Image (cartoon, rainbow, N blue to C red; front, side, top):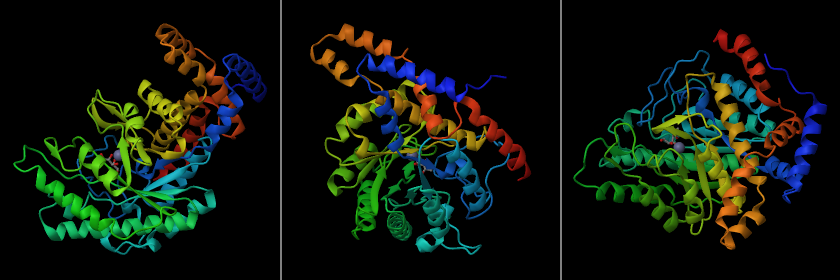
Length: 424
Ligand code: RNT
Ligand code: ZN
């Protein structure tokens, strides 16, 4: 069993690290302060394998999949909130929650998705207010009989399209309610699974239908102070391998022409394509972005986010480009093969660690080398930075934010698993 550093050791290590960074003209205190300001949106759906509360053991549709059967998943909103409370206690900083429409609380009554109202989310809003979490939202256009054909907003069936248009309108109003209640805009993200398994004849018409449907969804203006609309593209899904109506090019054009946000999910592109490189291009033209930070392993597998080169590159781009105020960072993965609370905590802590690494870069010096064309020194510096005492700064941040330092957060999760999860 490993031993834990004392508070004195953590502080002493930080002081040395701070001096080491100062030698590169990097202000570690400032980096920590900046990190404390960033709110990451945790995805509620990691807590119950994208199940929601409409029906117990509802099948997951839409070409996304959770694998694993780790015991103790949340079965209702109270359990999910209890699990989330633990996760937030183990993550430094104050963070947001990203909800899906299927997490409505309807008091045991069946409420169709196109009839959902803010009141079905009042308990979530109350909890969020009490705990200082901003809320984000998503219409759930999958796991539903009217999504079984594989098409929703781009269906050839006008009544199916209309149902999903109404659901998305209802979702925007719930987003507006969250924004008003909590005093921070809700990002309402539309993702639809629409697509063909095999080669289609007509790639054009479903896209025209999708644009028409989205225009209906967005017809009523809602103040950006309360709700921000975003659209999420995808390359392919299970069962939509040959064609996805809402492709990247489709939504890029849609977001630009309709002045809405664009969502970039790091698992939604070709495996050799990373979203890090897209940020500075897209942000030339789109005001704000939503990120779904995920980790694809060979495909859009939604693994828990680790401190990978790709994650570091995403956060570097956000910080180097001065994009922090314009990029909403959300997480999107679902792993049911490990403790679900650990999955939230590990992934979110990693997103924050990658951000801290980016805040600790000697940006001016790096840029000067690049502008001078000194690429040898640029490479040397980038590689040297990897050996700097970033871990000491991270530990200090955790101490300052009153959350467990190092792997100690697993102790609380293990205790909770024994006391709570094991009895579900
Ligand atoms: C699916 C999209 C979408 C979903 C969530 C549950 O590929 O990434 O964001 O993961 O809406
Ligand atoms: Zn996503």
